[in-house]
Image (tube, rainbow, N blue to C red):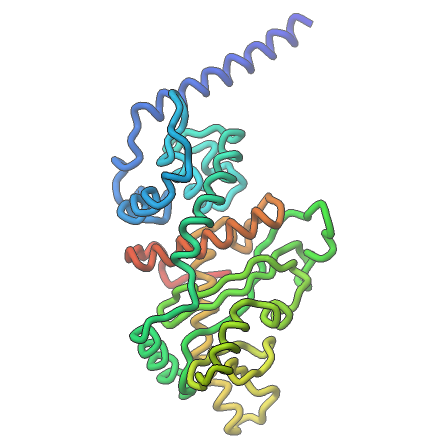
Length: 324
């Protein structure tokens, strides 16, 4: 009995020691003093982008209590998790952030809610300026020979743990539990739309049919815009504003040549999805989000907005070797 009590006391002492170590480290370590290359490696953003986001969300958090974590450190811990892709281990054990795992779980929920509220509406939008429209149409016409194309659409699966409710709806044709995420990008790899609310068993065409993006382009078409289109693969229905490839064309035919050009233009969305997943590895295929579908959906949305911020702040973290 005495041995058991001594072991429990030793564990308590170790936990208290680690708590004090983390607290002392937070007091003397300034994240922004980290070398630029290490900062980007840890958080995927450069310092100007980090400070911009910090300024956008700080009013969403109450004043810091004595001994509590600053918004800066909460943001750093959350970004570290998204970059690392492990189930809280990267942030919870990383002394650059110095946050215990139980504390981090609560921090991530608060931070994702704040980021989705403040960042996503600003940085993910279907609306394009006249100059953006002209640039995109020029890019896609050079690739495909199809006039009027401004974006591409595709779906991707993000692995999640089996949900407690309706889990069979999340089991996809690839053999794992997921969210079927629809993304759209422009000619600069910028995410223009994301819908991460659908269970993995849903088909891409179903997600598209019910999406706000379809309503947006349908509305433009019905109001007289016949020169704004998007490209999608064969999993999507052909519509006046959604150009898909021909099915089973003869080799060497005009339809086959059209499909080749179509694929050349459309592969930018596949590459964009790969870039997002490699930059924020918590949604990479080799990982798994250990959260309920709603929270997982929010994390995906935030990763897409952060990706767009990286593009604007010219943070080229990745090389050409991207994967889903």
